[in-house]
Image (cartoon, each protein chain N blue to C red):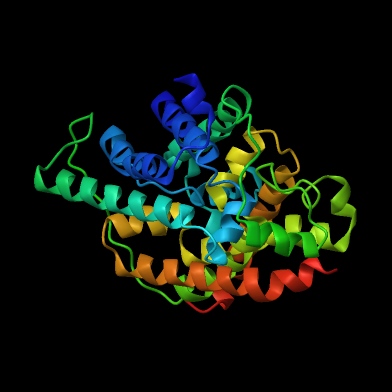
Length: 187
Length: 134
């Protein structure tokens, strides 16, 4: 059992479990599954300023801060007690492509040669870790949700604006991965 | 509140063990080199949609006995512009907001910077909101 839990979980196990988060949160207390709203919550709670967008009673939605604290803890549990002993398998075409950019460390969940504290001092590292994060935070709030709030919760409730958002998430991602990222990786 | 914490623990562990938090899996998805992410998101949506339909059909109530309510999403142009911007960030960092938290928990400490940058991005959006098309 523990051996099976340690290996990578197949999509047909993980996907339905993620989908069940939607009814779980609804039944627990009428909560709509969504993660990016916690970024706004943190702004409202920690960055006092006269910005109308952050002047609301964040404590009323405090449940989602408990939820993401749980995600953090769940990441720790899975990363320490259920750590996969086998290197992450990556599509050979991607390994070959990344080797061309000098990214050799397929095997960990993220390429540590690109994302590490020392890399923050380089333009490439700063673009990927800092600028990338900025775009995630800016874009999700502008779109009114992220992969969880729109692509999972919104689509589960058959909301067409969430389908528009999801199509745009994918379009932006395809453009970055295939057109812009190769340029950034060559820096 | 503790029940939401434990739901988060489960969700975070699933994200790590299914490698949804992996930069490599995201790159594969955007290059059509693997079915994995499409399988995860697709089966999550099917499960979620079936669950919501059943909750509505049988008028299931919450643990506290309230009727379940899901407000509809209203369309605005932010879903297009913001969606594209988020997509760009998703493909560089290999992480959407949920995985950011899970990655930090799993021990990739530098992702704290990505999370802080995402908070900064949200803050700047809040400052510029009135000037952006919606």
